[in-house]
Amino acid sequence: MVSEWRETTLGDVIELKRGYDLPQKERKPGNVPLVSSSGVSDKHSVAMVKGPGVVTGRYGTIGKVFFVEEDFWPLNTTLYVRDFKGNDPRFISYFLRGINFHAYTDKAAVPGVNRNDLHLAEVVFPNDVGEQRAIAETLGALDDHIDNLRQTNATLEAIAAALFKSWFVDFDGVAPEDMQESELGLIPKDWRVVAFGDIATQGKGSVNPMNAPEQVFTHYSLPAFDASQIPVQELGDTIKSNKTPVPDDSVLVSKLNPHIPRIWLVGEAGYNAVCSTEFIVWTPKQPANSAFMYCLASSREFNHSMRQFVTGTSNSHQRVKPEQIADIRVIAANDEAIAKFSEGS
Image 1 (cartoon, one colour):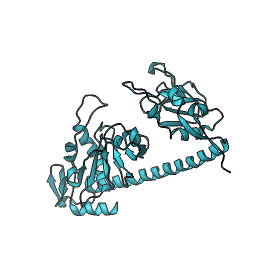
Image 2: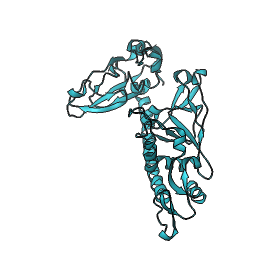
Image 3: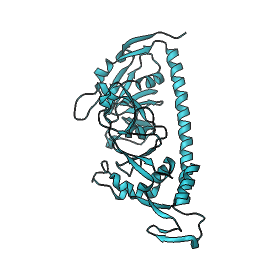
Image 4: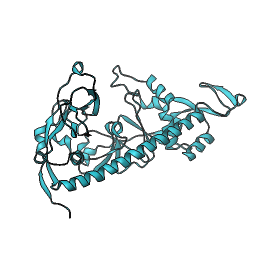
């Protein structure tokens, strides 16, 4: 029998508390996780909170929720659950993911979550701890399945990248007498040096999700990429700036800080799919497909070229222009080879 769920406030089911300062100079070697708004960021010798625990971003990565199995130290950019009030910690970690933390931020220049306001959030909550645990076990199994799929995808991507390099960078199996000179050095005869813009078209357009505040958007954001490479589902009124539409079978290339490569193979984009304007949207030109685009954009040679074009003096705000990305020329190919690789990927 399903237990009763009650309408209450978040502060009635848990108590949140701000994390603790720990300057870099005071940190000592150890195995205790230091949890920031973006997750475990360092280790220390002393814990401030007994595990298991739940932490979420107060500043910085607002609303990201982390479950910590062992004793830990929550940093001052976070809120952590000081009192679970008898509720299951793992369930609370999933439950908090459904809270719109941005609705409880202050209006300062650097927005931060107001804990007292967050405690007043209206929620519907299950009374029975057994049901909480069952829900957490189900969601945990789904998380494990997603992790396994992610590992499988990483293996397949590594295989595809190795094949791509073998075909279009190293020209394995091509005899010297079948090579010709080019701007990249020796390449197979009848092949040409290929620019990214030869096989990809920049997607444009602009969407303001605030114009549809009650609609759900599939949001390809930088934080979502960094966390899991899985887009997040968000209401329009929580997405505060214009975004770029994302079509199926596109590839997103981040123009921000190319020393941190962010290349996103989209596949089926999802409902109302949009992305941060820090991503440039690319769609394939025949005979290439999105997998070929992705392999090219993910290659070490491509990233090296991107880094040569950056503007901006700060490592945290360096950018590349879309037209510069389109002009990157780091491989040689012909239409037959591109088509053959695309058909097999």
